[in-house]
Length: 238
Image 1 (cartoon, helix red, strand yellow):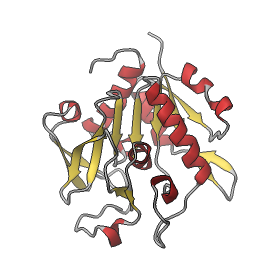
Image 2: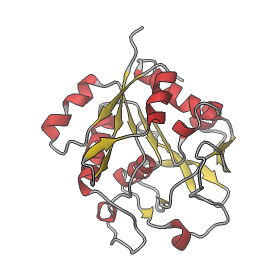
Image 3: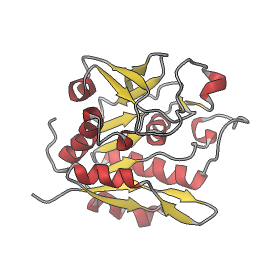
Image 4: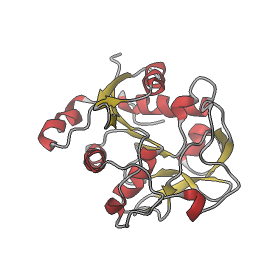
């Protein structure tokens, strides 16, 4: 069987003027049976539209903060680095991918991007806006799970991963108001939304943690990539 091509969004290093992405993303896709392909930030829609015809599934990756103007907010002092051009590109690509029924796995920043694309908002800095005993920005090693996520037992995600899983966590932003049409199906013990699904776009998996750093040790992390590749191979049912 032909291996599906999985497009991964790239981060951009302003100082070095290079596109980059951690090797764990590529290894996770390869381990699940897919062919990873790095997608450069391409604001010109006529240039990135061919992605939709040639790529079987997409991963929206981690990275810098999302510019608050995209969810109708003013930038607060503790909001981190933002890149409007990356936000514009990824929001357009995400909406187009879902409209074309392409499977999508969204991770960390990608999870937040999904919420913004559906009209939701973000906490710009969790420690000041939603203080918690849970450390959501853990120190290295990032391959170590540090807190639990409880999944709605009736959800497809719980059937895939289990009702309670251990995850890693390194983010200072998160979903605040949930986007229209999204359903929160995973929470940390402090009530933070850690996973969402969309009944209208069933081949969307969106999680706040970083499964690419856990795929070697955690079954739940491997299952996310395997499900994406399964869908991208044309096998819609889990």
